[in-house]
Image (cartoon, rainbow over all chains, first blue to last red; front, side):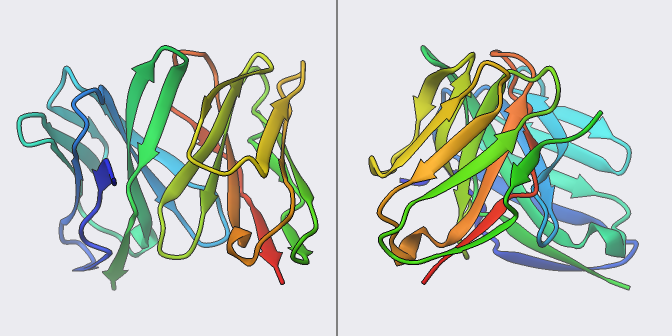
Length: 114
Length: 113
């Protein structure tokens, strides 16, 4: 049972345009959400996060939107650059009695064409 | 500040053997988590350690084990290797027990033949 899903395995965008990556979740206990970027042969790099008490968080070209009623979050990259080409993972966090846990989606490969 | 380091970076083993992977977290970070990434899959959570105690464990067989030392360095062990264990194994550290942000190492690419 996948609690965090990224339904688009890949996305192709022209340089300078907006990239929108989507993520859906099923567990209402998730209270924190993160996006990571991963280049080949490297570990994931933390990009941006959002707490469940907010619906938007912005950091430079990256904005994350959270729609709790729809259990949906999205990452907007504006403007997209060729260096943004990578695999993007969304992750959701929940606290349990033992501590914090992150659950990752399957990833979306973003290709930004010059 | 140095990032998360993992050794070795690449490893080739034969079915039935065992393997130990090592992770050194960012200095001052006390929580270490391990993930498995296979082609076409996201990151599958293996386990998490904080102050030498395993706090959470993912849905993996008992062949997968780990530990954390007093200096926060961590090791994971896979015994009786199977072909399906071929994967990228990622270690991540976070500062506090309450931190959600995790910082990843480059991973160890394990190939089982």
